[in-house]
Image (cartoon, rainbow over all chains, first blue to last red; front, side):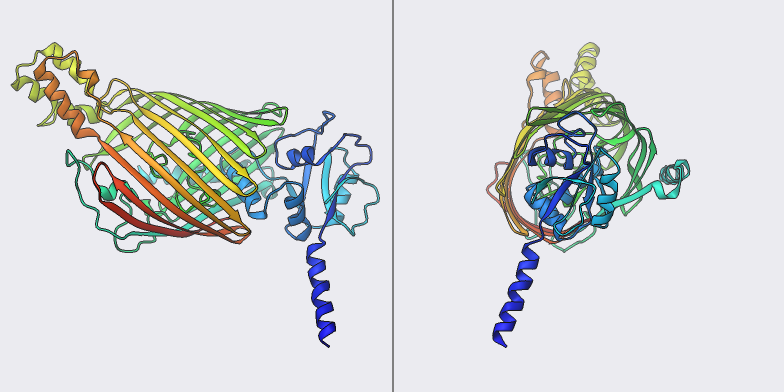
Length: 135
Length: 402
């Protein structure tokens, strides 16, 4: 019994840690995207992909994948991001990327628009999009 | 006047909603702070000229030994609508306890994206007086419970009307955000327990911020024509203890009296500058800001203010230490060319106006207990002027955004 509890606890632990995901773009997007350029787009510092085409980022609603993306790619915590965007939003200098509720919605938008960039959780069906980074 | 302001706000909201293509395009966001504070010591009224109040300096006259939750609690609701093709309209309605929660529009502007890099805002905005002035009231974006009072002193001319160009540019790994504005302000200025109509015309403002990942360098300032003629005339010139009466009784000539009025009157060319740096590296935090401001050729001498803060973020907690200093030394140099009698009168005016000096140390703890809310507590110690007494106090609260 003790072993089962230990096993369950470790599975729970793993599932909360392994909430990684992938950053996706339209298959026709050939921009050379590293994590630094992805970060600039998601922080609103750059409105274009490195090849000069327009970039529109899409966020995934708050959750483990979103938290992991913010931590690993943007190097911040959820609270820091909230403060960052609040400062811009309430002083007329910008607003956070549009946020969608599910992996499927992100994939549908990215697969139909070459200017979109988003991120989805590891297990999502990523047919019709191209993976440019993992976290 | 207050009713008129409220009507304007209501019309503005109606305008935002009606001009939107559909209700779905109208966004609502907001922020709020519930804050309390108190002092542990009875501030004493004492100064070399008996003119400033310790309580006023330490907690901006907001708190005393009885715990109060009203002065710094506030609520703000922002309504914005994207009208398409780069045009948007935004209104931020704001109510603060210190003003009995009267609703006012802190921001109300039209915005147009000229290009990806240039945006123009027209309307009512907060003047970027210092680095954090525009976001001063958004408590959630402030690490501690309060910004250093030496710099962020809730200036009454902080909300202005005008036009602003915002620019955001990339330069290698640096991102550069700048704003260039032309504004004006008119309002009531409280002095000696009365209100006087005051104008800041031709406010020309520049602010810029260079950001490289963990490092931010910032600087800015503005110049303005400050018109305090109502206050000058009523108090400094024509009042019973004003310059005109004193000059007449001391036999100062009419010409010199006029020159003295120009020299010590509060009206003149205002100059406000700031610069500093901020670091956020591996959860270590550091910010330093220095500002120098005042009105040239006036009895109001320039103020030199600065703060240095250092802290560490540990998971949901942040601990921060702040040292700040405010110094507004008396400066008689503008009176050098006057006769001894006129000089004596001028010095009396300068002495009576300002001579403020304090240093405060603050220890802050922040706990991000929710992704949209933080609890904070500040304990502080202020040393006033050249006196040895310390004044201690605390403030705490919850800041949230929605």
